[in-house]
Amino acid sequence: MMRFSTLIKNPADWMKGSGPHSEIVMTSRVRLARNLRGFPFPGFSQEHQRIELLKAARPVVEELPEMRDGYSVDYTELSKIRKQVLVERHLVSREHAARTTGCAVVIDRRQSISVMINEEDHFRLQGIRPGLNLRGAYELVDRIDTEMDAALPYAFDGKLGYLTACPTNLGTGMRASVMLHLPGLVLLDQINPVIKAVGKIGLAVRGLYGEGTEALGNLFQISNQHTLGEAEPEIITQIEKVIEGVIRSEQTARAKLLEDHHTMLSDQVGRAYAILRYAHVLTSKEALNLLSMLRLGADLDLITNCDRSLLDLLLLEIQPAHLQLGAERELSPEERDVARAEITRSRLQGIQGPPDLPVSPSVN
Amino acid sequence: MKCDVCEAEASVFLTQIINGQMTTVNLCEGCSKSKGVTEETGFGLAEAFVGAAPRAVETSPDLACPSCGFTAAQLKKIGRMGCPECYDTFREGIEGLLRGMHKGTRHVGKRPSAIITAAPSPKPRRSSVPAPAPAPGMTSTITTPAITLKEETPAPMPPDINKLRAELDLAVKEERYEDAATIKAEIDRQTKDTAAK
Image (cartoon, rainbow over all chains, first blue to last red; front, top):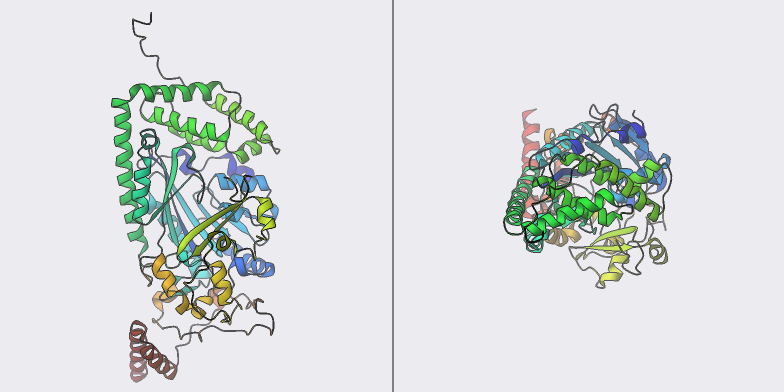
């Protein structure tokens, strides 16, 4: 199996690669909730029962062809910062990272698949792909789910489907979610009607790190809420249709910004570049919001020669646990703000700012 | 994110289903401790914030899952189940809840391979669970069967025809016609199998 440092050293394939609509859709993720017959759910079980399940199930997961040579760790052997790094990479959930004894996670080499053991359910299987590609993400988890099913007695009911700790996950146990970057709609103040419309069709809209988090950096997660009564492909098709609609709205908003609000747009992008390139203290919130503007500038060619994946990687590198991992010690919030500014300056070194527009003669 | 009680940074996040509505409560470490939120027990909290007690689960509060000892009262409080077998015990009580929560009340989609290849045998209600009785006076003690991975699991026994007939009668009496139809089909299939042998 792989070491933590080796896993983290390399960016996940979905961080580097680009997928359909990468300029607006960051990632597509699909997770499946699965449980074993005869065991109480982790939230109502005793420690020794969770350990027993972990001992029996972890080797099965580690030996799946997809997970071979991957990373596998018992949470009692993982520091708080390392756990948080995995959360920031969306490889484990916040809820799972908060647990310790009887919990483990197995991650494949490419950091595209993760299996959390003893989360709210016995297993949470997650697949992640770049861009709008829920089908691809589903294929990843569907395959390991089928393999796990061959070796483990899943709890399943003919009428209720896969049995889960919370009835909100019954049926398919599937949550499909898409992370969107929507600065155009936010700048034009058109985001709220979009969120409302998406909510009305039964989809949930959340911030960067899931439930209850703020939409920092103009990043929004859209996911299905219903899991019972519809098959997996139907759920995915429905979400993709909605997302395609949101993408069109964002494209329209960006075109309108270029056309009708060019000064405002150039101002936002220019300020973002200037602050990120030269600041010595950057809070997380400020950095995320400015990086969003820089990404928009790169997408609209106001900033040239800037690879989008460099910005997406930076978005991860400036998260609190990633900064502390790099420093190899715990950092106070103030120290983090300094470290964040430092890494941002260095990463943006080779990137040129937006071109100077000719100054109007009246100024001279 | 801020704590819902004080203004400190929240680190505990509780999501509960109350009357089919998802409710989230964010708490800082201090408040979560003072409100008694711990991994195992602190689930009644969202209820305290939202006020109204959920009415969706309408079973006797003493009804307990024979497999894990989880009670209807606990279900009502935390909105989650104790173990997979709880769904047999509390099936009727959550029907209404599911209707408000999902697109339908019947699963469509992927099934475990054992379910696809095996005959669609309807689960006898409440009796299908190998139910180790909880120790007297210890309702929340969970009895775990020894781990048996799939290779070692014996093939499911076909439910006894007489038992199925009783099930069918009960289903008709309770006007659960969809269940009745499934049970009827299973009886027919089994009688045919026997006749063929």
